[in-house]
Amino acid sequence: MSKTALITITVIVAVIAAISAIVLFVRSRKRRKLANVLDRRDNDSVHYAFIINPSKPQAAEHRRFIASYCANHGFNDIEFIETQLDKDGRVCAQEALAHGADVVVAVGGDGTVRTVASAVAGTGHALGIIPIGTGNLFARNMGIPVGDIEAALTVATSHGSRNVDMGRMAILDNENEDHGHAFLIIAGIGFDAAMIDDTDPELKKNISWLAYFVGGVKNLFAPKYHGTVTITSADGSTHSRSGLTFRTFMAGNCGEIPMFSLMPSASVDDGILDFEIIDTTGGIIGWTNLFGDIVYQTVTRKPEQNPISINSKVDQIQGISAELTLEKPALAEVDGDILGESQHIRISVERHALIVRVPEVPGTAGMTA
Image (cartoon, rainbow, N blue to C red; front, side, top):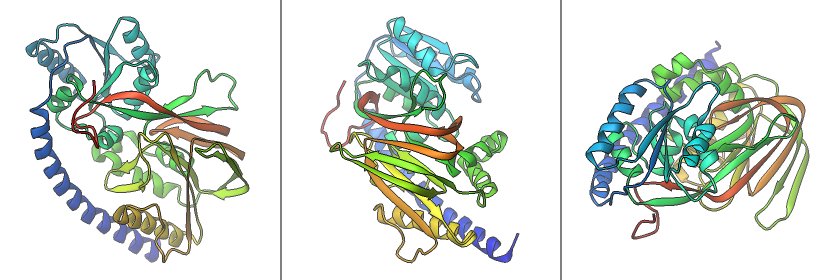
């Protein structure tokens, strides 16, 4: 590793450490506020179906706790359905709804949450979330307690919901695809998918989302991608770009990840997706510039590049859909789940498709169902 690369990585690690300290302080304040909010929640005694990922650490223990919690709070109409290798959260949620579930609760990480959401969307039934994964990014964006199963259960089994959007990525060059893949956080094709694919699962278990940093380093100098994109705006107008060159193309429903804001303008309930087309030049200098761009917009809370960036480019465009055609296949992902390679994808949004039980509803004095 060159001296320049070593210095760059050292600086990045130092910045991450500083931001981590700030995040921990903010989270501490949020926990105290949450405790006061949960004291005012009203229980909702209905049919609950808990879709649980048994592969998660302590899943069996969490299941026992949930059963005990429900019994102690008078929730007698409950069922558990476990995901399997050939039965993902989408299929489990469909089964739960067929059984008459009023609220479907995803117990797992972002993968379980998004697949359960895929089936619950548009049904009018509420989605509850008990986050027991490593990232739990959607739960964090919704303010749902992470690392406190009792608090999360209180949110999932009491009145207070928010209508949120859901994204879909359709793989258009695979005739075997029978549905668009749901995403609640970010979908992408290119570098971000390659980074996720190269992340060691065991390392992720040990150091959580920081493991993605290692996967990213492996792909810093991978070839760029080339293609054509057409984005449809909220007013129905279309905008096409041909001869496009980029490192990664992403669509965000919500843009907050641990410590950083990838898409400051992204909102989960505006009926719009935030698209980002990212490119770098100049080797490690370009990636350093890009990191500076992310830090800059995290601090300013604006979708703008750092004014001193010269070797990175971040185009941020809002719209309701995008269709991307590539010269060569590239890996695609939704909320951290790899879908495989594709040359032709379409990404769209379903406005207010989900009713998600959350601690607080922004901008309102009360709660919804």
